[in-house]
Image (cartoon, rainbow, N blue to C red; front, side, top):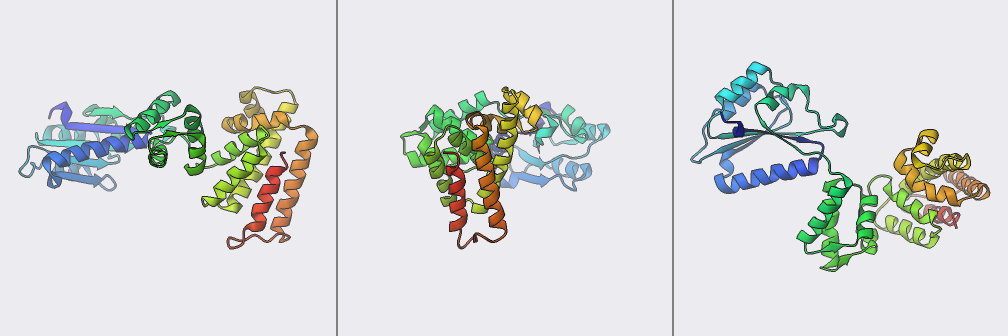
Length: 324
């Protein structure tokens, strides 16, 4: 075996990892045909089964590609057997997505495989590289994106390349060669988790109630659940109260507020402008109003169903207007 016969792809950047796997497989099939490609799920796979597959010569072709999705338990002597017995015309590729909590570390059972393979790692991109990648993707699709639109896209859709790739394709198609603006992003982009509340807080923190109303309406029109948005707004108010109390106590640095209040740092950063703008009387009014509305909603004073969400939508509007 030569070192270049066994490859190992791993990393917590699943988009880049799977894109490279797709590129490899696509190029191989184009050159050698699907009959010489074998993809195996590692679950239940033994090294004996794997040896049976990689020791087989290609079918009327120069090479054969065997792709293993996932980890396989392998001892030192077994790894040596794999290295010795792999057919000269077989390429073996292990593909292992990693959980971010592992910080790029392979499962222990793959350490011996790592020693005999060409290991290529796919870590998540930092923000600077991600911004460059977004601009390159836009250029590839004959588009471009304003810097403030790019910042907003990453704020509300997150930094997952898979989701961003889909959003970029949609935005470029919609803009039809024109520069993508913040209005395009707000109209078309998919929200990731609680980030829609962060953008809503940005608008409310700057006192832009009218834009906040338009934004929440857009979320509901694009299929967001009224109950889901209401629940996230309740969460937002609870976090805002904690951040406001820290600011009122003289703490102004976001990291210090996060530590003192027990609020995640990104949430503090989003809520801080609003916390600084509100005085005690204004915050008390908002909390009392929303607590009363939530109580009335849960006790049946307001009627809100999937078929008739008008009253719930009105409560959301009243909540937003309370920041005016």
